[in-house]
Length: 177
Image (cartoon, rainbow, N blue to C red; front, side, top):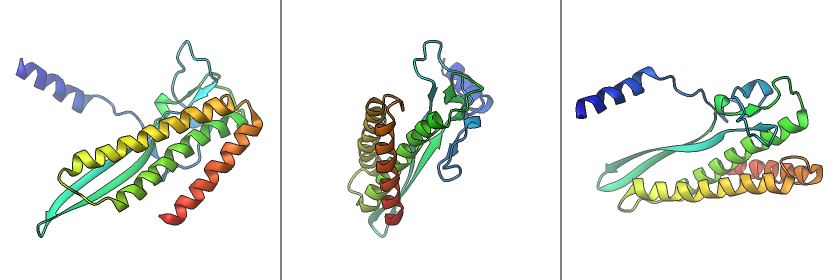
């Protein structure tokens, strides 16, 4: 049984195509060609961004002290991001989806700032993951609030308020970096 499980894991690891992705640093501005996914049959909205953030932790013991290096990255997944109408070129809708991407980057910057203040204690992996989960929860709450308050971009005034707010926060966090 272990041999079968190992072979299956080996096959999955080496022979499956990884999902295409790019980082915010590589491509901060989205275009409609970035949306390569197929919308779900029951999709109620016109488009959807699939983005998120992740971290990589390296911890070492230096001269009896625990030291960590943490890299935070924001990712966009084209094959999981979609628009209903492949010929769609609605720039207001694209701006709405762009802000979802920007919100993911904003929370990645907040996470980076928290990690800069982090002092390792006993279990860096567990401590760093705890901090990550806190910011990931806040990111998801912000994404949901954004869609709720703007009615998925249909309320122009609310959309503009969110755009201004996120743009301002991105600017502030770029100064702190």
